[in-house]
Image (cartoon, rainbow, N blue to C red; front, top):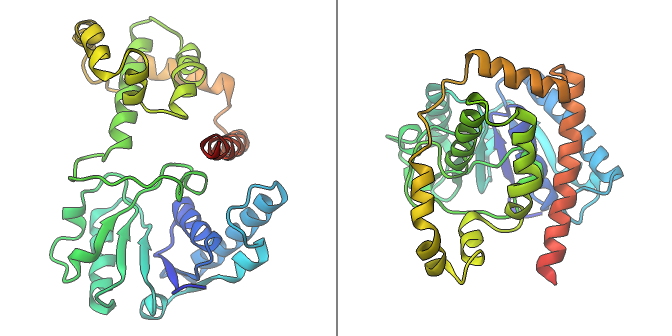
Amino acid sequence: PPTPSLGDHFHGLIGRSWAMLFASGGFKVKLYDIEKQQITNALENIRKEIKTLEQSGLLKGSLSSDQQLALISGCTDLKMAVEGAMHIQECTPENLELKKKVFSQLDLIVDDKVVLSSSTSCLLPSKIFSGLKHVKQCIVAHPVNPPYYKIGLSPVRILKEIDGMILTRIQYAIISEAWRLVDEGLVSPSDLDTVMSDGLGMRYAFIGPLETMHLNAEGMLNYCERYSEGMKHVLKTFGPIPDFSGATLENVHQAMCAHIPADPAHLAARRQWRDECLMKLAKLKSQMQAE
């Protein structure tokens, strides 16, 4: 396989998913954590997930489950873990001081070629990497949840750092208006979700909001000529940022629990169903693009 890759300071779902993705591409992966039990648990979870994926025909890459599992190992010594690595992926919790500590340790032992990457979802790279000798080798690379079913498909480059990056900002804009519509009694929580899953989401699985505008008229210029005044009129009626608490929170919570009870078993089963849907949709997208 190519030069070893690494999932650094292993933590939870995102770290496991990075490891599985790298192994699916034929890369050696070393999982590092200060606690040996964390590594043992991670390796066992990865083994179960990869075997399950293979049985359901959803395993990424051309290698078998056993071949992929043979590429993944664990290590409690940071220097040994990063030796020979070309990519280091940090997956610690969203704690700035913890992430700075991890990267300052790495900064002392890595070469001038390895990529130092953080999976942060909201911390700014300038804050995580400030003062590092190898700062020019540092990036933030954050996957869409659930990571294994999304990452490795469509990388995008953010040209300037901003709070929340791109996907999260768009997601929060949708959540914010969704919450206001429910809060104002205009629609039930379940009907709101239907608008996205059976309406907007169907097209957004294949094309984005800007291409949608382009296709919904005779091109972008024509769309804005026709609809910009109407858009501005509606946008001016949007309310303030919700506080996501109180009676509306209870209403939304009850509606969600009526659909999927909030206990671990029901949530895990629904996530598994979601992940299978996403993998099948990804296969359909690749077929459509090939045609």
